[in-house]
Image (tube, rainbow, N blue to C red; front, side):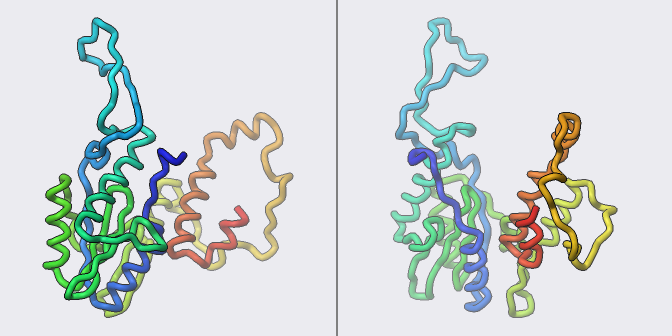
Length: 241
């Protein structure tokens, strides 16, 4: 576990950065690292068969020097690689979240929130943001996504001088994936007398087979994420499910 675990920014840390930007009137841009894992050097021994199309009459096995997609060590290797880049340019980890970086400048603080290969950069001026972009572009192939408006399934709006976080787009996608576009909406998601009992679960092999292709666990995962981000009003219902 120690050699494969890799942290990502906590959703509450991302929301905190959004709140700081609203309070301090900071600018914020979003970036994505192209083929991030391929930039990472492996420190563990990892071996693979030669790819199809490569002549290997001798039956050689390849030792991997760089991380590739699908390798369990790749995420951690990438995190260590980009961490070194930030530290080399005087960024520090936030004590509460190892994937939130900050740096003090004469204009204030610059923040970076890192979620695997997606990141947001927040600062008081576009010049400071561009300086961080320059550092990253010198190290990696970066894709600029412009001003941050949609991050990790959350829309945010600061146009009125306040911060509004919502998940209308994300919830709409979940509804489409579950085929519930025509479902009836209700004000209260839980009937007052409704109880879920163990005897209501499938008991026969036929009933279990019928449930096998229903994406209940997937939908509960979506609901848990919505609850964590914005949907505190459905927290009780989701825990019951």
